[in-house]
Each structure stands twice: as C-alpha cells, then as structure tokens.
Image (cartoon, rainbow, N blue to C red):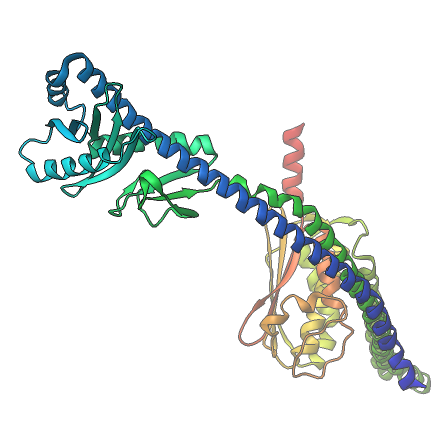
Length: 508
C-alpha cells in the first residue's frame, strides 16, 4: 500500500493540472486571437491615417511652391503691363526673380536675368522658359517646373496674360529653399506630424539634419516636384490606438497568472505537507535521541548512588554527575521555550556586575569544561554595577560556552567582555573546526547545527535561543570568521548604575 499512497499526490496533482490547463489553454487561444484581430485592424487604421497625413503634407508643400511662383509671376506681369520692359529691368535690379522671359505667338520679346556674367546658366534658364512657354494653350494657360541651371534648381512659372503675352519667371533656388525651410514646420503642425523634411533630386536635405536619419515614412513626389522625396516622422501619439488592447492584455495575463498560481499553490501545499510530516518525524527522533543520553545517565548514577550510599566520596561524585545531567535537561528545556516563544517575554532587569555572573557560571561549568579538555581564558571588561536582564545574559553565556565545549573540545576558549554606557559585549572564541562561510546565518535558525567534522550532539536550539534573547534586549548575536575556530559576538543593552543615577539627577 505504501507505493500506492506515494503515487496518490502525484496523480491528484496531474489531474488538477489538467483541469486547470484546459481552461487556460482555451482562454489563451481566444485572447491571442482577439489581440491578433485587434492589432490587424489597428495597423490598417494606422497605415490609412499615416498615408492621409503624408498626402496632406505633400499637398501643402506643393501649394506653398505654387504660391511662391504665382506671387513672383504676378509681380512681374503687373510691372510689365504697367511699364513694359523698362519695369522688368527695375525688377531685375531688385533681384525679384533670377530670370524673366516674355514672348508672344512663339516670338521672344524680352529676356532679362539677374545672374550677372553667368551666360551658361542664363542660357539654360532661357531654354527652359521657351520649352514651358511652348506648352501653354488656351486650355492650359499656366505651367510650372523646376529648371536646372549651373548645378542649381530654379522654380520656373509660365502663364499667358490677358494680352496673350507668355510670361515666364524663374525664382532663384535660394528663395525656394528659404520658403520651404520656413514652411515645413507649419506643414508638420498642420498635418499632425512630428517633423517634415524634403530631399531634392540632388540629394540635399531640407528641414532635416540628415536625409537618412529621418524616415519613419517616406514618399516620392510627382508633378512639379518630380524627383523629390518627402520624409516624415510620425508622432508617438499615433500609437495611442494600441492602448485599447491593454485591458485585453491585462485580463488575459491575469487569468493565466491566476490559474498558474493556483496550480503552483496546490503543488506547494502538497510539498509543504510532506516536508512538515518529515520535519515532525525528524524533530521527534532528534529530541528522543537528545533526551536519551541524560536520562540514561540519570538512571545509571541514581542506581550507583543507591548502591554506594555509604561512600561519601562516591555520593559526591555521583551527585555532581546528576547535577550536570539535570543542568543539560534544564538548558534544553529553556532553549526550546525561548525559541518557541520567540523570546517575547519582557526582560526582567536586575542590578549586578555582569562579569561576576560569568565568573559564577565558569566555576559551575569548570568540571564539564575540564572533562572536554577545554582551557578557558577570561578577560573581564564589564565590571560596573549595571541594570540589565541578568537571566538572559547568563543563559546566552551558558549556551555559547556549551557550544564551544561540544564543538571545540580539546581547544582553548577565550572569553572577553566589554561595556559602554548603553551596551554589554561578550566575545567567545575557540580553536575548533570553525563554521563554513555559507552557514554564518543558518546556524542561528532552530534545528540547524551546521556541518562540522565533530560528532557532537545537540538539538540546534542553543544559538537560536541566544539570538532571540539578545534581540529581545536590544542587541544581537553573530559569528565572525576566524582561522581556525569560531568567534561569536553577543551584544545586549545595559545601563551602568552610575550613568543611570547621573541621568536621573540631571532630570531632577
């Protein structure tokens, strides 16, 4: 039956896991499917919105350029109508345009340029103006294009006036670029984009520092700006549509996490039950073993005392053994109580000399320490009459020297005390096998005895009781590494009587 019982928790856990995994899998499938559909719809809407923004930005840029060409042409046409070619010469001197061309019925009437001594560039602009003027018809009374000249680009605008004159005006590249730079920020704000930039056919960037760096979206332009490229950066707010999926993510994640947490908690509950049962069995075995030795000694020496009751020397010797074994049982019981309570009993303050308490204990433990071949060297430093928890002080000291006796038998034990106006300090060092570095804290836990090469017994309560009592009295206990051996340090609050009296007098 035992193997069957051992497999029962595993089978139960498997069944529970299957029951939990099925709804988790179904919920996960629907959650992922819903998220996928929602994201697809969001991406479509995002792409449509992005295209609308880019188209709007391109239309605004084109309108700005057309407005510039129309404005300069309007000035030129008005001047020509009012003052003829002489007025155009005045505009040339003011550099209103880079080049002006007037013709009628295909015959050139006037040609003016602001490009001094740039004959090749002027010739390129003239050729461009003649080509555009030839495209003008009754149905198409105006046209625009970028005309290359001397490594630059001029915006050429040609229109037919009311007097059937074909007037073409070329705006210098610098004015075009100045207009675009000043208007790109407005274009970005108008279309809801973060930034808008342009790259001309020569690869020069306008409105952006790097033509490559700015490109969350890019679109080639056509018509008047054929060969140009629009680069835009979309705002972070465009991702806000994704926030609608956040509740779905949270709900799906919470459901999955909840089911998994329930499975884990059930598993941990079963594991803890098994561990608790094993721990109880181990505690009972340890306690039985710990109690067996002193009880056996008590029984043996009680019988010897009865048989040798007439021998005074034997009675004294057996009585000492009985007293020592009773002390062991008492210490074990007191430590168990201290650990079980967590040292929550209020300290009972007494007035005495701390070092005197330790001397009395050393006298009492001298036979036991001698049997363990432990040589004790006591360096007192707490010799002032003080208010402190004497019972806790003595109990901690007994546990520390008993710990040294058990785990460092045959070595020297050095005991040092010190005292300040607020605190007692006790150092107990031995030359035993010491304590591994990774067990500095573990040995202060109940039922933990550390790993040493000695065969010393113990229930693992002494050091746990020492730390609990020390912390109850405003101090602490820890171990410091030495090579070889172990060095335990205990601190505990204490007020010298003189200091307390002086403080009381000053308050009065």
